[in-house]
Image 1 (cartoon, rainbow, N blue to C red):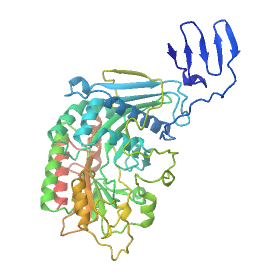
Image 2 (image 1 turned 90 degrees about the horizontal axis):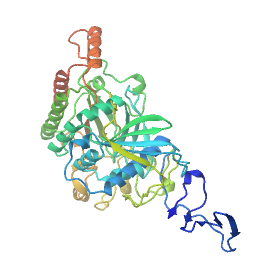
Image 3 (image 1 turned 180 degrees about the vertical axis):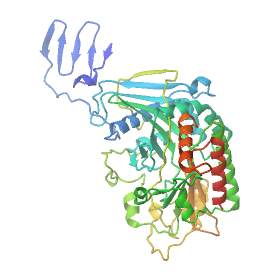
Image 4 (image 1 turned 135 degrees about the vertical axis):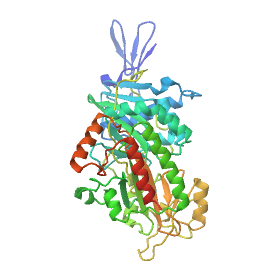
Length: 505
């Protein structure tokens, strides 16, 4: 019988063995049940084995637990056979793990925490529908600590973006968790019907973390904005004009999120061409009708604009560019990160810390949700590709600096790596891969040189008693017929479709 010493007891030995004769052998000395015996013969001193793997953890205990939990969850999913179909119980299921008195790697991990994942099989299937590989998903969240980003919303939600700018992590309320549980089966059916082609938020995972007896809820979504090019202008559009202008505080930021009135003042046009408009409005109308059927409102269309006529700042390229091949010293962050340079990282590459968890699973608990805020943009500037650049060469490797007067280019949106290589070989730039930046729409070829990134956000708000009261209060304040944002789902859907139909050309 072999018994391993619990590391949290502070024991420095590697192991102890209890034999059938009752003799317990310890490294460095031996003893019997009657008492200690002679010390072992002199020889090479015993040395405890050192940890071979390098672990990547954030100094923020909540983020550290999230990274550990996502890694554990993906390892568990990849070690069991995948079910042929989802059952009704899968939409109410959860997996929970508790760790107590854990001192191993205590510099980066709290001693007591709980990690709970909601509907693991459902979100695994959603990731497949959205063409997000589980290992790539884990790699985005675990390879390097997520970075905090600013939120212009009023809900006070916290936002983080992964190191590769592909996924966004957002804190949500228990009311929002409960609402998402109510609609997740309908949401999954809709995503399956649409084959993953939707402007709705691409939900990839939902978790509850308990650290220092404090519970927080987190949702992981695909980033609407590009992971490759910089967003120069952002708009949050609802189709309403009452109290729909960015505050002075927001406008003072280097890259503010503007609203409907600011959009109208700036010219209020999204130029993507007639064919692209028909395809986009078809998607938008289908998604809005779906939200209306679920009695949801207060959502908005987040629009990010990359202006190809603005040359990249070489300093920004140097400081903000993310490259998977960067050396460890080239990565600057507020967190101490030790990078394992294998990419993408497999469960074997990112082996788990040897914790002693207690795991349970069962029916859904009463958790819930209320109001979402804004997703975020990638702050990675674009690069110009010289004519001598080879097909498939990364944009960061082909950066050249030109003056604003000589910098001209036309954006191209293609599908797949072969399309990217073909476009680069033809000298086109920037080239946006639709498989990666699924929300990208290029501007009309005969108009501006811009790329739009557009998706629906803030969908977890039901038109209940609270919103009815807000509707009555705003109606009394602004008068009947005022274009307020809080209205019934039917009116809300009709208004946003009419507004965007007029704004898109």
